[in-house]
Image (cartoon, rainbow, N blue to C red; front, top):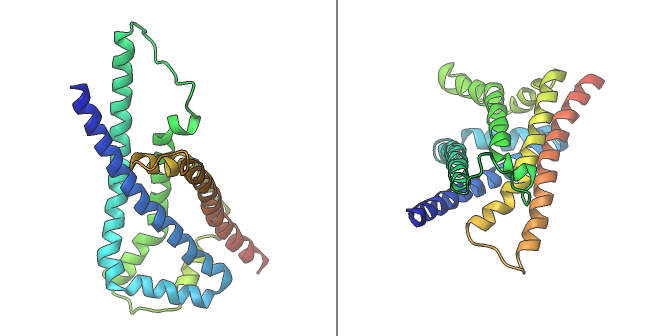
Amino acid sequence: MFKFYLHYTIGRKLLMALSGFLLMVFLFQHLLINFLSVLSPELFNEVSHFMGTNKMVQFVLQPILLFGFIFHLLMGIILEYRNNALNKQKYFFEKKYFYKKKTDSTWVSRNMIVTGIMIFLFLCLHFYDFWIPEIKYKYVDLNPEKSDRYFHELTHKFHDLWRVFLYVISFVFLSLHLLHGFQSSFQSVGIRSRAYTPIIKKISYYYAILVPAGFIFISIYHYTAQLLN
């Protein structure tokens, strides 16, 4: 029974890792596009217009991405629940009637579900700010497509300090989630050795710090730019 459960859990972790890779690729691509709003509003509008009107992106890649995120979140909740149940069962057989905290694990690794839920709450805000208005603009109100509207729509959301603060806090949680999730994904797919593990850890550290920091910089930059103007 335990062997079956072990293989079942490994399979779920593998699928969760693959969905994590998909989300990390999207996150990096999303950062590159959003950073164009700092460098060139015209170029940002051009690229955003392509992404917003390309049928492959809108009707194939976007649904896959949405499914990947929901799958990743649900799988994380299921694994967390099952791992906690297995640990409690193990400690019961050992006649230890308390939840034993692992001393060899970090706070981030023990609280991935917490940081994941915080990221989900942020995405609800992000959908409310951008995705839902975009769907309404194109498919409900049937407005004519304008290629120069994206920069204004982005910067308009960062004129309130409270929204900038929420974005900053959310990306801090994202950074914490990635600090463990990035390298854990590679381990789940079997990429673990003395040669590769140190390199993966270093890359995961830079990715987990620099990518969220890039989004934080963009939100603060546009808020500050509007104050100065």
